[in-house]
Image 1 (tube, helix red, strand yellow):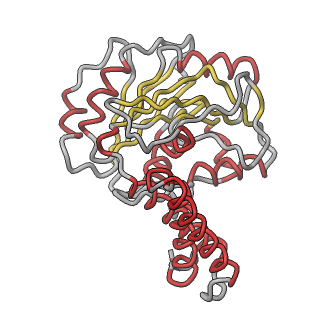
Image 2 (cartoon, helix red, strand yellow; image 1 turned 135 degrees about the vertical axis):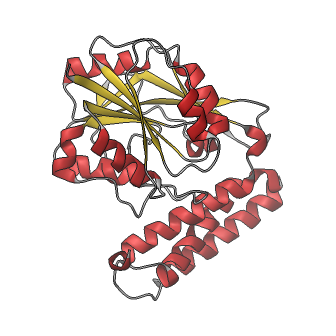
Amino acid sequence: MDIAYTVALCTHNHADRLVRTLADLRSLRQPEASWEFLIIDNGCRDATPELLAHHAWPSGWQVRVVREEKLGLSNARNRAIAEARGDYVIFMDDDETPDPDWLCAYERLIRAHAPDAFGGRIRVLFEDKRPVWLKDELLGFLGELNRADGIVPLTDPYTPFYGGNFGFRKAVCEKIGLFDAMLGRKGSDNTGGEEVDFYRRLLATGLRVWWTPEAIIHHRIQAEKLSRSYFLDLHYRMGRMEAIRKRGDGSRLPPPYLFGQLLRALRAVLQQWRAEGRVATLRREMNVAYFLGQIHGWAFGPRPSDV
């Protein structure tokens, strides 16, 4: 039997999160077309292999577990693409709970619009008390996303889908290539951006990308593990990676404008600190971390030709 959809989940040393994800997946409604569930064990050294080996899967599910030793989310996703038997590959993360209608919503989108790629809504779900300093404007950095309230095409390179809830026709990789292994999380390294790069290559090639708010995934957040340093580290690494890609094999001397942007960002932090206190300054501190990352990445980051 031909398989229409491959739901792919990549995981690395998150057995504690994966337990609930697998339990919640039992509520997933089955699409009309055939599908498979593909798990990429990305070099797990915790209890994940044992958990997957002994898990009782729902009756009728087609499940495969494949191990990818080369660490990195992009490497794991590329392995998922290589292993997928479905016409479409649909990705989710190991700390998410899909809405029961999630996969059926994507099936409706595929049948109505035959997209080359697509993304869906992500809602943040706090598993415990939300920190007082965590303002709504910061939820997007935890995965919260709703591009539109209706089903619409995505055409703006600055409004990508997010890596926790997206999919594409497997055949598009023959046109645009795979995920960039320089980007994406690697163990505890928070560097991301691989799905944004992939999305922009889709648009640049003229492929059709659609958005549906009906395909909802809940990104579970353990608020007690959140810290201001997480957001600062995330932005530092974002700045560093962007600078490495902009600089390419050019001069390692950072452009002067970066130092001006850093000084302005520092001044903004101090002004808000005096006016509202430290609890209000995180968003501006993130800008400081971003420009510090850009300067460091430009001066000391590896050259793409050396990776």
